[in-house]
Image (cartoon, rainbow, N blue to C red; front, side, top):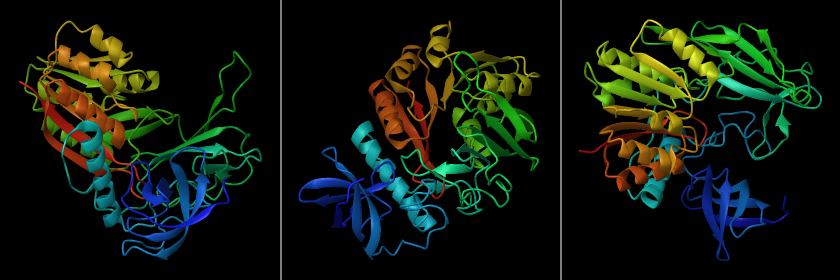
Length: 398
């Protein structure tokens, strides 16, 4: 880390949790600052043309600055809540501005607005799943920003009270991972994976508390999802996104729908209800654990096919087009090849969900280049206290 400190006035927020400052013509991405603030920034990386820094003293604070809502986050703390010092309403405005900027620059699409709250329950205590690493001394902790070092104070404000009770202390193998989930029955499950075993041997998995699978419910359907598999982290997200998919897909009985990067098949369930037994739904994901959860939860719905495969290969094997495709890809987005496959298949309606602003904006631009139009676009503050967002675009073409 550099010993250089600079006094700068920061400008607009950038994607990734920093604000943009300039000093002697050099761009400095500055974390832990808000737009318009004058700060003393400690340079953390000066190896490239674009420097990175952290605001270590706030000389002229923004009116949107509040006392940190997370007791362990900050410059020398955990990297968990990198916007904990911003008023939650202001944070939503900032996130909307960042998405708008990315859409304009990378997607060639004009949009504006704040990120929307997922529910009315506030910015803290929203997370239902978390993963911890362990130190050489056997303590569980959160990573510092871009560091292998861990903060072993477990009071992250994203977590509901009691979620990590009893998991501190030197009780874990060094190099293990702890997966913790509080499910929809209020039961806590703790699963330990690792530490890495010797070559050619799988890393051990141990249920420390509860069960390997957590009970999750959306609508009138129940899932048993491995604690180590994907499920929406925000307590209200799965239901919110399912309701949006049901509304935006505009499916009718007898139609065909694709649920791509479908995880445990939550969206497949609402689409199956819409198309009925005369229709068909294909849900695709590479995770075997998620696929098992989908098959079990949707066992009574004979017109849903669960495929454990890459989306690219699954689409290549489809003889007919879908009436609607829903995509919820990882942070890297869907990308050119998948979007061109959908366009070549003639899919007329797409609901695309993205959890990273830049890749989402790039994907929107790819849809536009392939003849789609954006009918609706919304941004959600699905990860309060952090810079992360979830974006939803509804796209169509004749």
